[in-house]
Image (cartoon, rainbow, N blue to C red; front, side, top):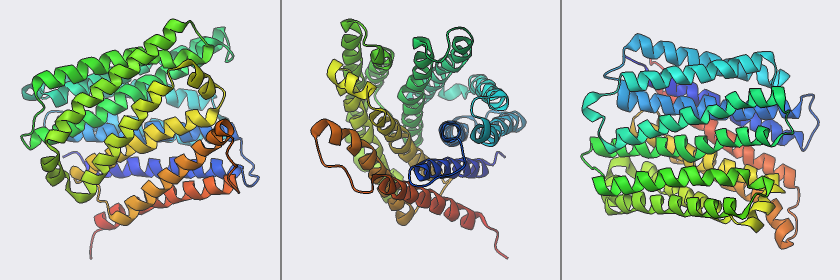
Length: 404
């Protein structure tokens, strides 16, 4: 039997490590520490995306789609290999940034993800492969593979054109775009649909086809948002706007399904889970509206000239949409247990962090007064998130502790 609960605990430990690294970054602004800031940034982002989100997703996908079909030995080898690569990045990035060992472990992680994708397609449940849930996860994994072109391209760009090249930033944005706009969003939606299918609630085939078709068009076209920093031809802005509208349309299709079955969904997920589901899809909708506004030339220029807007948006997706979705799905699978206090700490920390981060560019644009003790406020908000994550982790360790 595959011990999915232990795998979930590992993902949560990585999440806590990433959060502590993020808190350390906030502390840089209020005190002096003998660390290289950029190195900690690299460690924070890699462990958050690859240690927390990726491992949580492959655990959920394994639990809902592969547990009855994949050989236990094969799964454990791929999982163990993946964890080793993340530990390697956690141990190397804070001390050397992008250098020999961190690059080796990052490369090995990509290879590990290819093995997981191979296992997913090889050991797919034949009787479920035509279901909307399976198709959604299939596309999510395909987009994950597509996103990996970005990291491979970075090495070639660095060796030939250098980090100042247009292609360097484009390679990074290519990776991020297909990660947070496709792999992660479809991952949440696909597992969500699988849970509903397990309770005999299925999305209509025509509605699903409309959702997935508009989603694909939107994801491909919104990539042009990633190159607006170059101030390209007007056609790039037009394509970005069209792509953003298609993404909103895809959301409307999936929301139509959710709204129709909202009462049943509330009963299936329970009080905390249903509240998190509502938060997840609300934040997803706001994220798509943000992308639409970011597609216009004026706002695109504002984003290009203000990194706080970019950071706030990425945190909105990773810490808001994706993480709250993962919490919901893990709890429904009974891989974690949540309580109101820990979730409130996390959500409040997330909301305050987003407010403080986004207030700074808003103050400049709208000529608002600056926040007093801005850096300390950001540190305290981040600390609340750390406390929330730590409390969730403590609940799991206490629950799994053997009684004498």
